[in-house]
Image 1: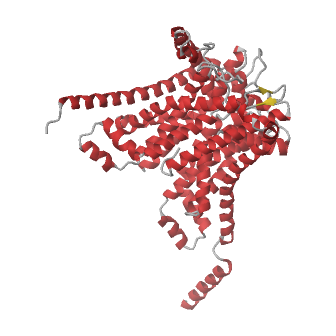
Image 2: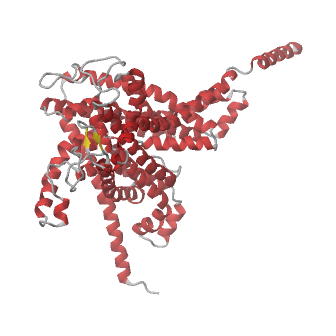
Image 3: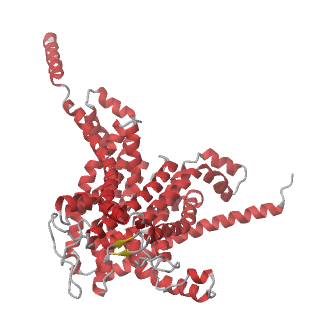
Length: 283
Length: 325
């Protein structure tokens, strides 16, 4: 049975087209990434000055920096991560160790996966309704942190569950066989064995929330000065939003500097998380 | 001696029996604590639904069906309708998917089948970084860098080349300033691309090596292996991955807010300015002056929630538990 040369040629051609297409679109994606990073570095570095970390956000036309926004972002993210770590690790532990195949467990797992992709702006609206409108009656940093925490919790819960499931059953059995209460087994053996994975999840969650803008627009809002958590708290994303859309050159420069700071933090954290997972796999 | 040892052991055993091992008393408490944390996840989703519904109820009650079918958005007169917002939201998301799907599938195929091993990690990380860049940075880049280039090299030539009166002419009418529905969907496409690519890559890696290798062994080309063997093997999950991208695109906020132009009219062309539900909430919510304006925005949020919830549910059902995203 002879294979026609024409058919081979067609197949060869369509395969080359397929391979070329894959190379081409990957190149497009990488070019987009390079273009965004290039802009960030170019405009961000141009906006950098010693004032950035020593002065507060200025009104248009006067000298200023981003000190209050950097500090505010750090406060908001720190509190959010503290809440999210506690809730996320406990929830992930319940899913991995206690839920089993129960209906309720599957429901929570499913909802968690939905929350992973839920629009962050709707979480902001929810927290606005819950805390700003009905508890505090004013914009506050606490509401901002809770909104960010709700975005981070599903990420941490999911990774915690995944790494706990990777731990061998014999580890649990050997702990229990020594007469250790199961919750002590979880705390002192399973969590300790899973530290790397949980840390990776925490880093990814942090990278999700540190550039998050939408939910802060109506929870923490903004502030011209350093402030306590119970007031409006300045933060880098909202400063970027306000300043980038302003008509003033100096404010736009500040916005790009803020963008560079936030992106460096986010991308740095992602790369660290990536390196952590590699070490785990190779060991 | 032996007696003493036995007495000591017995005493120790009695002590243990009396108090139990250290910390045993909190055994149940810890389980309840974990259970409460897990329940909080359910409560969050329920809370979003209920709070948006209650908060938006005044708008639903006052405007009724008109809220869904009219496009008037007039905070001064207090008249609100979300039909153009819904249309723009869906339009931007679908256009974005139209561009993101071929690219992300190509990237996933590249990473799984074609990429040299030493480049796999760097390129994988690069795609991850693309997903990690904050939405607002995409917005700024879109408005200040991409927009002007797009206006000059794509919008203007397309408009000038359009034969008057044709569909082409209609689709490209408007002001070529780089903002608008098409620009927004291109930026959104960039943002959802890594999510679809990463999910599809995970799925493709679940195809058993024997299946792939036997296809290669029969003499199939790379293209044939992917299109006829591995992609059909994960077809259900692949559709799920696309739906996941759709869910992301529908809720994309900050980038769209920067570049869509924020005009509450029915879009007349691809270059026309528009406003999505998410971008309208981001722009107006903190400055909403009347209770009805706030209610209308919350009601719009409720609609967005229902749409994304349905899309994401379908996505998750199709992907199953195998792939992370």
